[in-house]
Length: 394
Ligand code: GLY
Image (cartoon, rainbow, N blue to C red; front, side, top):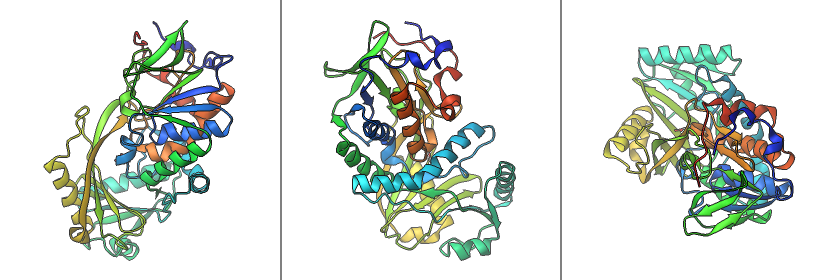
């Protein structure tokens, strides 16, 4: 079957005339569940299918809501999407806490970026220049000023930037809240592993599960993260697993006010404090396919750098190590909207920004599901920006 890439934005092709209100969302991570919640709120009949909801990238995510400190050269469209989502986060968090009954740990103390040697300092200067060129709010701090804000930082810093607008949230709490809120809104959760998309008469009519059963739908949303690249019945989506190893530590109450990101002689590390006494240290970035091993080298590098940035980390208890896969794409931006097969919608490829992009993705995809029109904000992120993709035979 050929995916008609030239017509991906012909939204009228996306929805089935009668059954469009019955939606199956494949994937119960932050992205899939938030779409399901929003879609159910708008009156759609939604089923989420996942064999282990929230056990993928959502479980390893540090929860940084960091459009500014994640901004990279040439990714201005992604930055706009990230900023639009950041703006939605306070209301999203409040509504989710109300609906799901779980505090989601939105922390608005901002982010400090610190560097250690002359090269790190040059990198921070270049970052500052780029961020200012984009009109983003960033302030240069002396090491002393940085330590005034975060007294647990090492005195051996070379320089620092303060990014007041980059926040964080507890992604596991967000996921728990979404499970409760979605259920309360009428979303049905089916435990199962999606093996393919059912296509009949040239359009998606549901999903096939690996136990041989199937779920029928007017519209299928694929939110399978790094696992959504090659699925029978769906076009190939250029997502690849980008492995990240992450550490959780306990005993960190009061250690940090907000997120600290560091360049330690060219190596990146971040420390994200959560409510209670938890601290997340992350993350490695590795192209190793679906390799779930936590390695001695990965843990060593993260701890060495974290301790160099905040020496007090040495006293904390290491309570969890985990490796999962960011859904990376060739341009680091998500893939949103029509998949080129009528009735099939994509919400994947959120790479380093899954938690941040959750509210805006839910709004944009739900708008498409309800009205048949993909909002303009999502236009740069459709699948047809990549070379022609073929649907897999189901
Ligand atoms: N957003 C942080 C990471 O992907 O490691």
